[in-house]
Length: 257
Figure 1: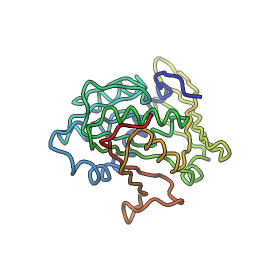
Figure 2: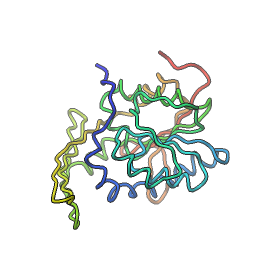
Figure 3: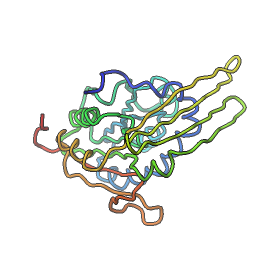
Figure 4: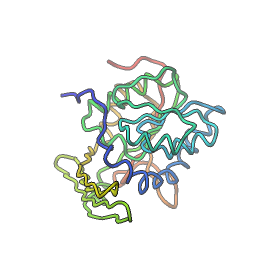
């Protein structure tokens, strides 16, 4: 059963807290990889699609270096902050599984386990097909995914954030039988009095063979996969990796239907 065609808006109630506490967390860690694997091979002023751009911290980093960036996200609230964080980027409110751009781009990136939020393999394949359609021939696509060891390490925890104008209580869990992770949150914002919102974010754990098959179906080839070691940098992907990084390219041949 394929996923319904809808804008992915689950992050709307989380946007303000995400922007303050999560938005800057991953960009410094992953940017050196993007610089090493993508940017040094692109022409000056190249066009980059930041797919599932969130609150725009990565887009801001890239535009500051002179790249032409389009950020795409399903959450209108996340994009509201993204426009503040990256005023020189263009932003598009659309679903990663079914989007179009007016022009093809030189590269596509999608980071911070954004694609784990796509809950079916059919949906993930649809994302890859949409990426294929907007990439120039030979253009690189770089993305990451949480892997099962990572869910075992970090998705069975409870924690809270308390600030003067907001409170965030988080409960995470992972079901190895269903290969599904759950992020339950209670957010309270001080806006003319305290306002409470409860919501859940879901993630799906995909195996490497599933990811490679979906990429191949979409016509994305020359696939490289990596893990990140804090001391060694990029290494080959192993079964113990908590996060996988994939680099592939649009092949010259047509995608498989």
